[in-house]
Length: 433
Image (cartoon, rainbow, N blue to C red):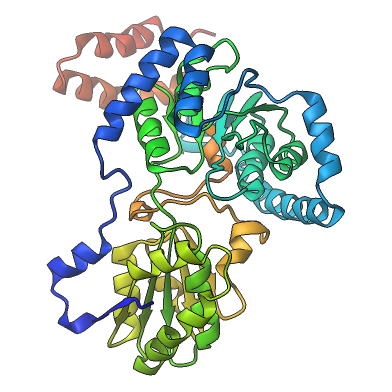
């Protein structure tokens, strides 16, 4: 098991670009598949959703919604230790996201001209939690807690059914902790389509958020073209570790493997200024993955991952910004010193005692993050993801009179006479007092 290795000074700009390019939707035929699913769900509603669930998941789902008694049963199935861990994670996620609120602040731009911005919750949101190869109650919390803080009036949660048609008990307990009662046993593109167009059981939502497979991301892209907002189009999970000679090889190897076990298409990248660190970490990967239950996924992911020897930490961080990772770990002697060099990353973990798993679960930050280089222009899910911002302005008569020459000149410049007259009629009217 070995990661490919490169020396940064041997790589051309084009080769660096190739290494850093990840396409979350490589197969454009997925969009055609999703288009057919959307059309069917729009035409036949729940019936089409059930048919696609059986086609893709092999599961019969006569009832799409999760009943209250299923929540109660789930609560009895989950151990107290697990429930306690979920409650602690929820508390930390809530604490951090509550700090993101924006207060209303009025600014006087000029005398008599006041402008400000206010936040309003998005009325209805649809949350997608994958269920393919792992149970992910943490994602329920990451998506549901900020939705509750924002004040979204309708929150729908879709999760793929298990082979017996049920939803994992841990997911239902997490949903209850997050205050979500509308849970549906639907996965894949049919879940996204149902939340986008609405069915007899599934309410149409204003925005869809959450990670998922390539077909789920293709469906989200199609939903955005049909007028439903989305958080982002996310690809496979990824981590980039920057390490200097002080890094602990066992820590670095464990971080790479922890990311790789997400799935065969995950990517783990190590950039270091120390050749000995690269060698030691590489030699540890086999033993670190040996007894993992998901060893096959980790091994496959590491085979398509790579390491880079960088001449300096400046060069290492420059490469990291070009890659723009979902997760960036700085295994450095003084990581705070290098924070200012980080321009593009979904979430950053500083120092040897900040494993990515902390952010995955319970440090408080959100783990729904941009992948595939989208961190260059997108942020991870936050309270803002559930809010819309509305600008307000209020002009006094004096303020309008002072601004009028500028308004009229620009209206004439753009040959919009109606605009100019909307100002003139007010000036001609005089004081309204």
